[in-house]
Image (cartoon, rainbow, N blue to C red; front, side):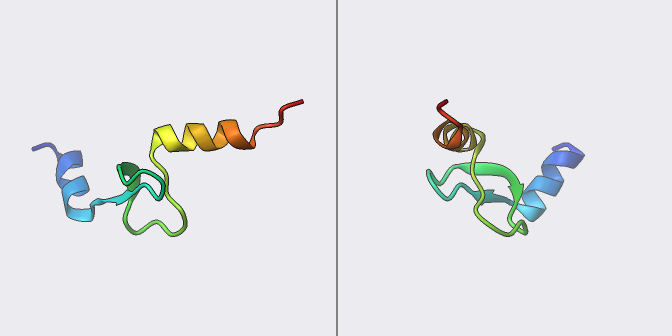
Length: 50
């Protein structure tokens, strides 16, 4: 296990509020956390449609 893996295992990652998959954010982050896929989908939904 590498140093970054040990840190991740100790802190844990927050679950995505939409799909439940692990995110890139630690559990200590406040607010709605999304996985990269759901973040991309949210950006597409909220982008200006011209």
